[in-house]
Image (cartoon, rainbow, N blue to C red):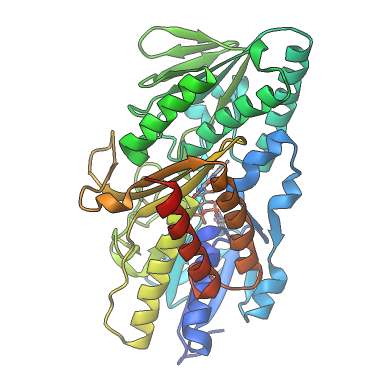
Length: 421
Ligand SMILES: Cc1cc2nc3c(=O)[nH]c(=O)nc-3n(C[C@H](O)[C@H](O)[C@H](O)COP(=O)(O)OP(=O)(O)OC[C@H]3O[C@@H](n4cnc5c(N)ncnc54)[C@H](O)[C@@H]3O)c2cc1C
């Protein structure tokens, strides 16, 4: 299969990390590389926008079929789940077949492990997949019916330890508040938010914490930080400090693990692949890279997956071309949080702390880069990202390259300068 002169790169996964890597390599190296994509899914799911499903958007709106795109970019596609990597023989086993590689990029993402908290699966609505978002829609519709009939309800949101991307649950609680207010049903619903975090959206530093505190006060959402769940009984959250919190509807974002554990490759207890923080090369295996949620960067985010993919693909390109390697992952997170009545933008330069309780902190050496802004205008930014990323991928192009990104980056910078501080 592989041409002896042309390096053969196998990319595993068709999420943000996998697609960005494959299309970046094709764009940067053209015919000087052979790229094969292996994935358990033939589709790309734009997960960030699945937050709209509980409020009525159809799941199909966020799913994109990929086969035609790979054909267009001359990227063979293998629809199979990767099972095993043999770094000595340089083969990947997927769907029972061995696939040889010169370089391997693993972008297999994360999975949820709700069973880590006894009773969570049985008693909570969880957010992760479109199916779970549809179940949450049924719960919210029920809540609305009860409120319209004058019956009170208690809704609680819960972030347990080892959830690695709490932002979406903050979006959900504020979207629910706005949605119920618009429907004239908010007064009947008591909303509370419990998180193990020491600060709200802890990973994004003090300014996001202050923003959430103000929003919770304005929206009459009762927040509790440092609330560590021990178990969930029917209608009751039991916390480690011995207190309990009753609920009628519970919404939680469960603890994270790696979607696929690769036996024999360097990984932590949750299966996340251990990498060089800059190049994303696997520890002890320089020809294998890990990007996105499946790697060991402690914050799991699509934007960070894209940045890691760009760094890994550029590093690999430099090696293939025999250039000096300079590419490095710079963890500057960016997100836009939906709230329906407005949205909040955050750009956060991060550094690793080595402290498992608080594994990242806002970088002190880049104060001008830590920006937060809030307002209705940011909803336009959210819509733009939701359209631009799938459009780039459906055209077989990496997101962070080329004119679309340059225009968007300039736009975001202008908006950040004018509408954030
Ligand atoms: C509700 C929600 C809202 C979110 N909102 C945001 C947001 O606003 N901004 C943001 O930046 N991030 C957001 N995120 C996080 C973001 O979706 C993830 O960080 C992102 O999807 C990670 O990309 P990835 O490529 O690493 O993994 P994924 O997107 O999960 O892709 C993994 C891919 O690997 C494939 N795969 C898995 N195992 C195997 C295997 N063994 N063999 C072959 N293929 C395999 C899967 O089929 C999939 O194609 C949100 C997440 C959720 C759940």
